[in-house]
Image (cartoon, rainbow over all chains, first blue to last red; front, side, top):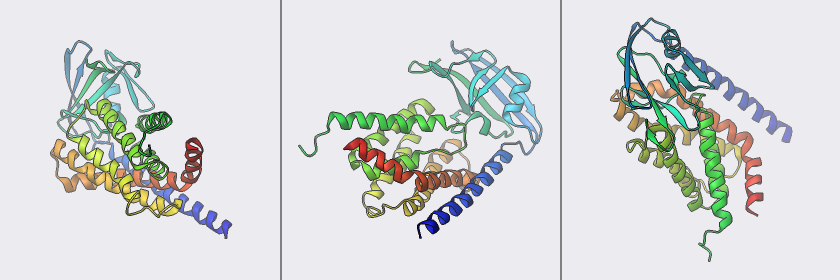
Length: 131
Length: 167
């Protein structure tokens, strides 16, 4: 009986795991742009100085791929540590990402490219407020 | 005397809040896979309702401070979404203590939380709520299944550890 219970638990877990992997792969596929378009990248440094750049993308491009083509980019475990002149240790500061003015609720690798998207990277000090 | 909060309780609340907050930040690189629902279920079943509510309150404030510079649109919805778990587990589902039904409840809580959070997301991004919900379904499935699996396998050993810490 105990063996049966454990076996059922394992089978249910494997099914759940399969569904999770399926959903994960589907999300990864969705991250790719469906059509060509343009995006605006805004970099805001420690002093609050803004630099804007307009970039174009093609179908199946991802945001990270586009950024890597134009900026010096460092991402570790999904965390953005460096983009162009914005560099953070993720301890005393981090790079806040805004999408069309709203804080991004997903990591940089999960952001989907859409036409006319504005991605704003703001150097933000921990406990010290925005730049 | 009965309602007094002991130094040990304060220390435990601090440690458990830190675990809740750190795991969520550490897992941000995975889309919607987190241990938050599992941990809140464990806390709800082993701590006093008021203690779990304090943990969630601090966690939500910290999360908003870090992720959205204290975004007042997200905050109340996030608070309701997470607070609903201890409230339901201490009322409607008080008698549910086995890991399998609790895992199923984890699925329910994950979907309810995701649907509550659709409201501020749709409000801020000004997208159609139905379109946003459809796009959100794979993320909801990931949260629900990660909650189900963690509760199914880790609930019983975690409860034992917490009960040992409390004794």
